[in-house]
Image (cartoon, rainbow, N blue to C red; front, side, top):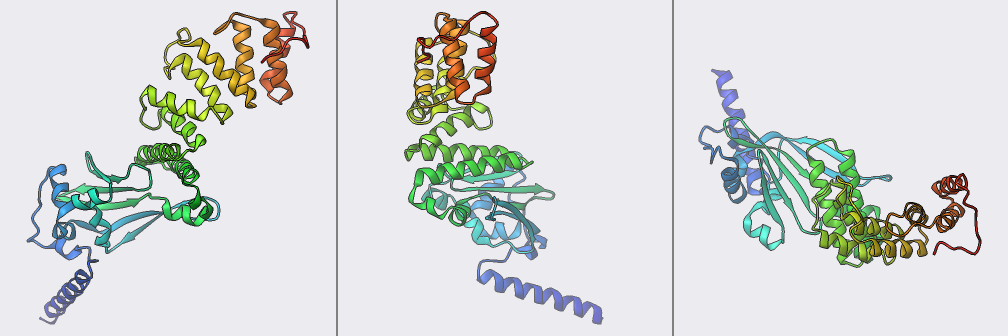
Amino acid sequence: MSVVMTKNNRVRQFKLKCLALLAFGVCSGAFAAQSSTAQCPSDNFADFVKEFSTKPEVQQAFIASPVIEQTVVATESKPRVVQRKSKVLDLQSLVMLAPDNIAKSELSLQVQLPNQVLVRDHNGEVLKIFTFKHNDCWVLTRAEDWSLEAVLDVQYPKLKASPGERALKRGALYNQLGIDTESSASSQLYISALNSYLNGADQGSAEAAFAAAGISLSGQAPRLENAKILQLLESAAKSVPEAGVALADFYCDEGNYEETRACVNPEKSLGALVSSARLGSSDALIQLGGAYETGAIIPGDLPRAMACYQEADKKGNEAGARGVERLSTQGITANNSIHCL
């Protein structure tokens, strides 16, 4: 009898504790999840999310205990991913899921089957991933906050005055996290990297424009339309030498690396290489040398190819030295009156 009374007292104390926490909006509903009165809104995940995102009582009832919380924190060297198991999840972290709050905050909520909810903005500043598991019903088991604004404030406080550079750095951090993270979150991190780079490009950062085109063409992030990629590369190539090399390639292959074909726009490709070389790119000099050597986008001119390779060699590009040696074996000699550019 005393054992039963002790057990009932513990249950009563737990109820009172949970009610007190609910008054402050922070009870995870661990007790409610165990209650026989909690009815599953739907076994269909998309329908379940509609109920979960709008009704606090559903959230309280269908959060696992413990639940895994993940955040990114600043360290001296690079951001670090931190995980912890929590008995109680602050329900304030779920308020953002409500449709009205999503709209007011200019966020987007995406139900990603089979079991995730993604919340992000268009600029890459917000990325949250909520993962559920289904037993008798869907239960929130993992809440990941990949947002990097707090990290940037700590590690790069001076970037607040330069929105374009801040967005560029944010994109680079997302990209590195995507590389370092061995989980399904990687693809979402690359998307946030792309969004950050695009935001930086809109703020006037040429480096961000180049990075946006690069991560899109790499296949890590979604492929942008060719017109957008061209716009980004043309903008970046005005001040970023290596962007001119990428632009020259894009004029030729339009980002199609799977088939070999003639250069689509050789004149523009040549012009981009020349501009890039004038900005100081030794790689552009190498590609110009290759163009004159093979006659790929311009009539062949071996003496001029030699001049391009020599200039690249002077800049320390090892491919330049190899080009000079290769042409020398063919009897091509240096002629100081012939210039690459």
